[in-house]
Amino acid sequence: MSSIKEQKAHQTLDQSSMPNFNSSWVNYKGAWSTTIFVIVLLKTLYSIIPFISPEASWTLTNLTFNIGHYIMFHWVQGIPFENHQGAYDGLTLWEQIDGGVQFTATRKFFTAVPIALFLLSTHYTHYNLLLLAINFAPLMLVLVAKLPVMHRVRVFGINKIDHVVD
Image (cartoon, rainbow, N blue to C red):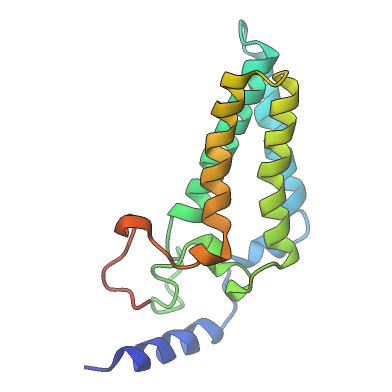
């Protein structure tokens, strides 16, 4: 059996041996504009549904985007490829972006987008207190998960993989 220190060293070597195709796409041309496109598409889809008010469509857009964003960036762990020998098991996409370096342009963009969407949805819901609370809750869920202090932290052990060395 190897020690935890040796396992961490092997994991670091495995992670640096080749590019991480799971997280490198966020730095490609068009990834940021695709994110904006998804928001516009969601807003359009909710707007064309009969009997849904503009306020409700903005709130549904905000909820859908933030829940999808949370699942994609902060819940799903590992990578779908078998070429890293488990080096990224237990790491979410957010933890994999830019090798875990905090405050890069990509991380700032993916932090700013939910904030901007919240501000837009709050404005277009005319600052209704109930809708403000409904829009604020998923924003906080997404933003707290992005904090540097939350890097590799699993609150109450939720979503923790047992065989992964922290």
